[in-house]
Amino acid sequence: MLYVMILPGIIFYIVFKYIPLFGSVIAFQDYQIFKGIWNSPWVGLENFQFLFSYQDFFLVLRNTATIAFYQLVFSFPAPIILALLFNEVRILLVKKTLQSLFYLPHFLSWVVVGGIVFELLSTQGIVNVVLGFFDVEPILFMQEEKYFRTIVVLSGIWKEIGWGTIIYLAAIAGINPNLYEAALVDGASRWKQTIHITIPMLFPTILVLFLLNIGNFLELGFDQIFNLLTPMTYSVGDIIETYVYRAGVLQGQYSMTTAIGLFQSVIGFALLWIFNRLARKTDQGLW
Image (tube, rainbow, N blue to C red; front, side, top):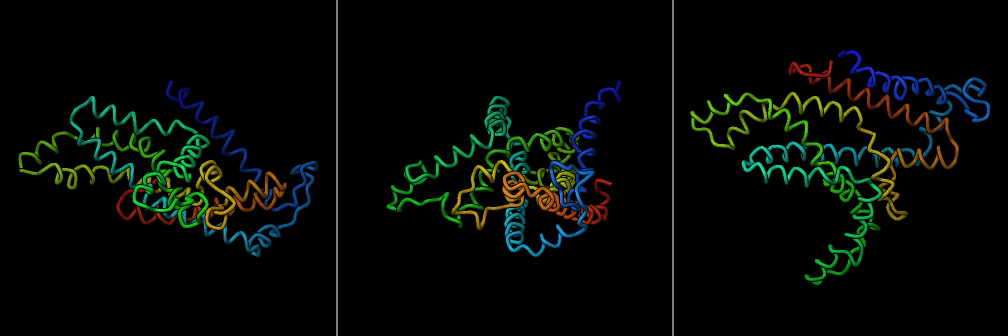
């Protein structure tokens, strides 16, 4: 019965993850949609040579790496901190209500969230209205480059922080309560219990999720950036996914965009392998 239960998951990964891997050969072809994979001419590494000589690619790569770094620094710790705060709420009704409020944005699409962000940050939006009380001129947040990456990170945190706490709260619930009782007898405050018990016991979970995140370092997600991007912020907000959409879907450059995706996967695997090797030094890791 256990094997039957995991069968849908296995089928999903075979159909949508492993079989599409064979399509990566397009990166080494001059792929023509009417000829298909079998009849399209092979060009070797030409697509990669063109890719690395294309000036816009390095701009897109820099934007992707910069935003990914910001998300790793600010977005990744946010659910951990929130889960620790939830753990300190003792009134069950308040705790459940807060959790529900923080979970809710996860179920909104980025189309909806993007619309909310544009409304809040418009010249007539609530943010500029509040700034107006302090005699600050309206700011075009969504049209100015210097605000774009901050908006991306903060909107991502707002949308996913609640959902990200689920695994951490489950890990906290699995901590032996006897540890807290012993610490309480020794006179440890709630803060010291968190520092010396909760966080160390959470460390294996944090490390595994960090490794999973680092493996997707260059995969920011198309939906968020596409819905927040404006022509005035392309220089700081155009990332690999949005570039692939324009070049691959709109312009039909299938081989080059497949080469970009393959490059993206290789970098992700290399980062995952390196950080997993480092994690093994603490007797943790994915393998």
